Image (cartoon, rainbow, N blue to C red):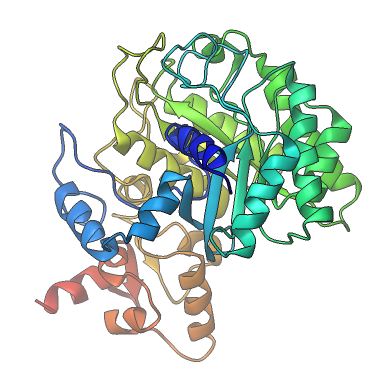
Length: 413
């Protein structure tokens, strides 16, 4: 890799934080800001959570790590939980669109414009892959000459990697606004994951962020088309689809964001939604807009997982008068406090759907409980702990063989 190519990757890497993607840890508690609450869902303060998380992940960066990060290579968590080194980059930082929040927007003088040709990018990543410098690729691009032309260049890059370079690993490819059906199908066949960022939950909110983008035709349609392709040929191995929302820059409510997320899960086969708390970028129209509280992003992730994995409906979540989730309480705990405090579940009789709604019990925990019930009766808190349940968190909402699990919890102290 030449010095020029290295320099171009470094320019791109400096602004790629705008994309959440796989390298973002949605489970890490955000840093505490000036919030009106002191305790986090598991009973610890935000400061305590952040300190514990930092201590568990703090590793001294080697010079090699620093160099990799400067090029846009980060540790990433794949859909199946595997961790790889992911190069997150673009074909070009030039863009004809003027999205108000974006560092790559047209006319932003602070952004240096650099570009890779498809064969050049394929060669650069191929070299990284052979050297085991990077194991996967997240590839996007600024838009030049329209979304269709730009999509062709992205597809050519991936095609070279797959067919000429023999790369068989993970590729996350962006779909450009207005991508055509054949391009979407080709992207899904060549890639492991494809995505297009809706950025906003509806057309009116998008106008405040990206006035040149068309919500329905350019952004939402490719996600719908991808689902149609997958349904038409279910025997083929197609890439999964994801999207991303900018949170807090357009006055949108959490009800709006989660309504669209729920719709996409049900109607477009969306694998997941990413939420990116807005942070102002210098020399953009929104540079003086207030940064969004990262706890809002965190609560949106928690709620979206309840909708996707736990059988919750949007109407069951707790929202304020402004349509936002309360920052001071985990949304699953908020539901349990309203519905289970006075009517706790008998853990030995409750069905799968009800058990999934108990704080501290996830899908794996439910399966463990159901399996244990086929063998015998769960009688004590320690029985739940032995199954990997967060028993202290679940106890206030459960009965164990007719007795409140919470009272057993109290006797332990």
